[in-house]
Length: 260
Ligand code: HPA
Image (cartoon, rainbow, N blue to C red; front, top):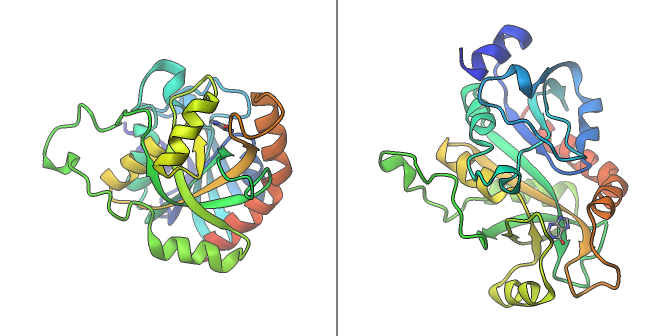
């Protein structure tokens, strides 16, 4: 049985329009899903066990803003087991459930002092600073995925129409789990990074591989290493994501309406 079959057996055959991957501390969106059917990742073949605090590890099927949605509350990261393909099964499952698009969210550090904690940034493009790729090991010509407009411009325009204060920028993926050094942040800034984080990029590549349109939103939880006064910590990431969660939730709900 595939994970998609398991989902249909529990939550019904209604096609999903939009998948949403919830980043650190952003799981609260699940509470807004109507007629929610929640399935622990442990019950879904191939799904990862997320061992990171702030990530629950459950798929929630239901209705948000009138659209049929599948929320991935909890993601697996490369840094947990050294596996860039950790989110392959969840992203493939969204495609098998007929999702047209996926909204990827994350908590991130900012390289721009004017885009501080609490800001939201629409991801316009990314840099795989880690040099990793989740498609290594795939076979066939489909693996040569075009990444020219990986973050769908039309979906990004919709996000900006909903929240005029939304920043826009480039997200750079560092493997983690240690935070970056100030020198790495200076390097990434020279290369064009506006935000840095430990996720999302492999999911975007997988989503494009499986034919999903991608929208991405970073919730800025801190200024990146060397730019702020305080040491960085996961506790701070979760606390700041919590503070910005209501704004992210409002944005995601309005965004979902576009898929009703
Ligand atoms: N770096 C990497 N990942 C992060 C950060 C950061 O500064 N903040 C939240 N997630």
